[in-house]
Length: 289
Image 1: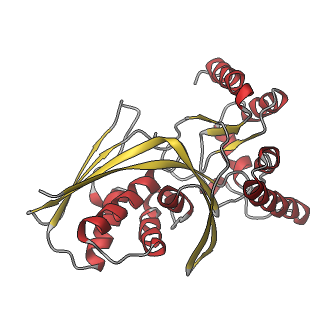
Image 2: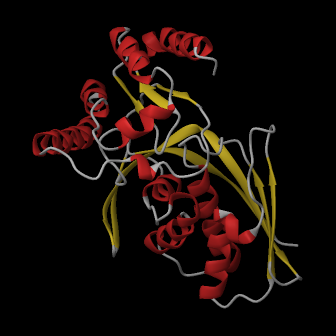
Image 3: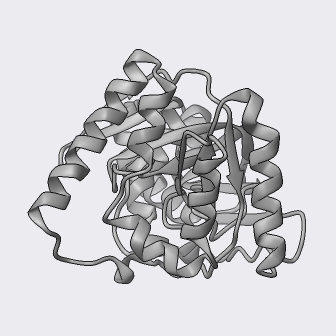
């Protein structure tokens, strides 16, 4: 039975001011996906995870890997079945792109398994459609980050267009906090002050320039600003703004919320990483997380 296995990286979407258009791939956190051809029709999906904090639906229509696989098989009229085994290490509901990783991982490996002629853009498009089940609408940022690595900027959604940039080496501290898997998008405001939107555009531009130049301080300064996602998702993280202020006083370069939350990501210089980790652990211990 032919089998293909791969690891798919976690991602941080938004990266501060880039709501729904920025994502960055993370080096040391992965899901593992194995896909085999089967003589039986249909898709058989199996999910394993380290502990009971992981609750992943295995019904094909409720799982992003299953949806993406089914859509791709229908697109190419693939008749024989598939067995999909997913080993989860990315915490669901944490804002670290686990649903996107599953979707793009399934698409990428089925493409390889059947030697399908799919461009990166088409793979991202198919996988992002599967994200509707978790986010309410298609999202290309996480799936593009998982597929392409580095930093991804989504230039356009229809038709899909993107830019990928290499990311300078930078210590990142991720605090994995689980929320309900239900989308937090309804919490996001619909109207913003013009002056605040100008600052948002400036911060997003600074982030891209900082990545191109490898300027960690400029990257950190840009990450700190967000009027769209951060205020909404912060309501689900006890003492978030107090923690952010304390971390910045302790020389963290940038602090914000990863994707839809509720994980926090912090960038810092290597010499400050351990004190940052200690402060984060202390804060969440005090608030009972």
